[in-house]
Amino acid sequence: MKLLYKNIFLTICIVLSLSVQAQEKEKDNSNQDRDRAEKSTAPFSLNYFNKPGNSYLVLTLQVKEGKLVADERTKVQEVKGKMPYPTGNLSVRVLDAQGELLDQYQMQDPLVVRSCEDEKSETKPVTNGTVQIMLPPSGNIATIELLRDKQTVQRISVKALIDEYRRGFNPPKDEDDQ
Amino acid sequence: MNFLQFKSFIFAAIGLLIFSACEKSPITLAIHEPIYPTGSEAVTYTLTKATSGDINSAKLYETVATINSSGTITSAGSESLINTWTSPSGDLSFSKSSGYGTNKLVTYRFEVTTPDQTKNFRVTFATRPYPVANMAAPVYTQGDPDDVFDLVFIPDTDISDMDDFYDNCRGAILESFFDEEKLRFWRRQFNFYINPLKGTATDYDNIATDGQHQVPSNNANLTWAEGRVLMHEDNLRDYASGGLFSTEMQNRGTILHECGHAWFDLADEYGGGAHWEEDDFPNNWPSLSDAQGAGSDYGSCKSSADAVQMGTSGWYKLCVDNCQMKATGLNHTAYDCPCQYRINFAILDNAIN
Image 1 (cartoon, each protein chain N blue to C red):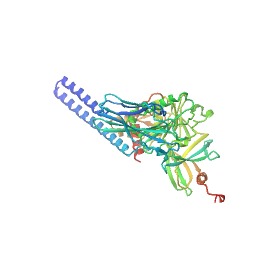
Image 2: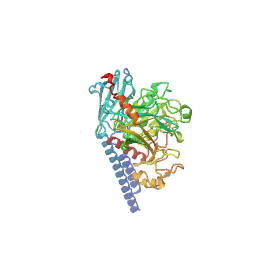
Image 3: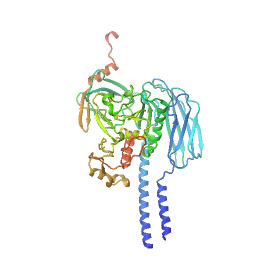
Image 4: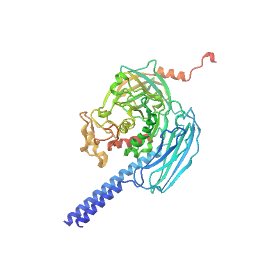
């Protein structure tokens, strides 16, 4: 009987020791990750939204019968701040006039509405409405391509809109002004 | 060793195990009230101990800056000590009875010394009204928006008492984000703002007649935030689209579930939900064998036996049934291990890249 207790005792010791070690290692790793994140995080700057060069463009487009269209309500705005951490399953590819990739990022899909309430989850496409798509602040932007599950959803030519916006932002001087 | 000694040893060993799992220093939460005070309102600062442990001493500092309508800081202010505590026994609290005035950005810093370390909690908030037109007011900001996750609270036009809305914004921070264990661990990696302009939420079942959520007119100016939440009073079937989601303002579970999507790219964990597999640390897998294979990636937390199909979706998960990515509603639950690993990855990735 004594030997049995001893064996059980030793087994429990080993299991507890391994368990404590695993917990400590996991905790150490988490704490190291947190220290690394906190050291890499700059404090909130009071003038973050006023820093020169801290801006990007937002393109507001209409959705009609499930398709993005550029119409008289389409607008381009410069927005203060930087584009958010990319999450979501809609991939946005920003291309120049030669089809070269200028930028690519993920965003939460604005062409789908998704309800999670009461586990009665349901999604449906946006048939009519307004969506906003972020664009980098500079570059010879000509086309944006939207992809879902690596399949192209839509390509939209935005060159004229961007050019018009930039002309409006920096209007050329009329002869009368000279 | 007799049976009695053996039993004593088992209890001691279990006690040691529990003790070793506890933090030596207390987990502390710094917050102020009201969350978005007017220029004349008193402000109370608290440092709450969420877990047991000793605080040797603490100091509270403040810096009051002035901001104009263009968003320019016209006076940066300087940091001054406003209170100290020596060997405090409970939670710490200090009230600033006079208001800070208008056009102010107040930064307070709790410097907390425990037996293990000295930690600083630095938080910035604006006084109401925020003078910068069409911009969200910072109400609990800690880190550079490029390095942390940002959430903008947007009031709905149906809210009858704005103080109720402000209280629920504070409630969401304290009772959702700082109450869920994994997010509380990362509590310094989140910023919160209140939008001065309102939107109008619609019911998912009435989109055909009422249209989608009417976003506030400054919505483009909020797109830098990873999450935007339209908080309303009426009971609606809520939904999300393009980084904007709606919730009844008192729902602590819905806001965490939706931030799981918007901030961390976590997929749903019920049959009818939205499913996908992330490249790094997914919480959904497209086959049973994939989920089983991932079961060994979470230490003792999970095993291949935890793999289960979500309804008849053809998608599989490892998380427990009450994981936050399955639950919405009034009360929050907790993120289970696979979700926690994804949260760790996203927060670190956002901070360092």
